[in-house]
Image 1 (tube, one colour):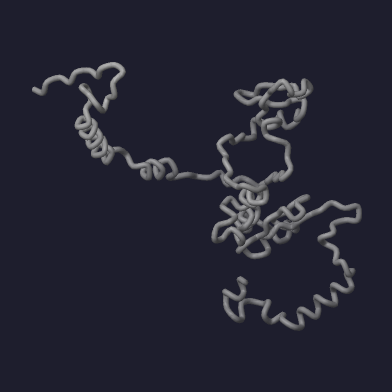
Image 2 (tube, one colour):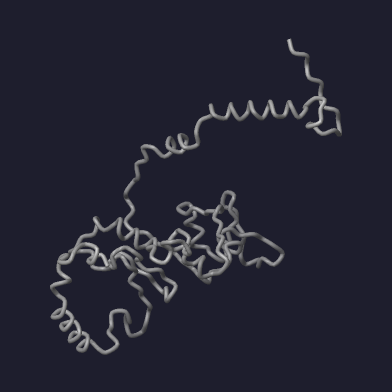
Length: 243
């Protein structure tokens, strides 16, 4: 039998012994390294937890609220109270969430259908990059960052088969009050691009030609005469049609 190893002396380093020498440390470390090979693989665990996932497939619409100049989440969605928090915020607890009921009373009634995500981090150093990242869900400075589609364009692509040509007359992806902050369809076909709507007392500016409808009709007819043949089907191949 091996002699028992004495306990470490208080205030001494375990690497210097006598209870745990450098040799003992290497022995224990090597044993742990070998034993780690017999532990379940993270990949197997991930595959197991994601296998046989059946989606409900019942969603009819996706609403993405993008607020580039929004109030801080610490004052709204996940209220962090300080001495400066206004009393009329009426801070109320919903589970482990503090909510400004006086500020957002109706939205507070819908919290059962919402998910508050606290684990999101951004490494973008400027607002513009962070705004693009939140719309394309990838690094906007990466190789495909400048041609990556908006999340709304991806949803429009996925929902295309559900559209009824006779009933669904509106575009799949409608963007309200976005201005120049909206990302486009990227490398996806332009039919999945956002249809931007800016409210106006004269209607929808995006549907009105600046030179009036008559001038637009003349230009459209001229365009059809010049290259209608190239716009029907794919006469010179798919790459050109995709472009």
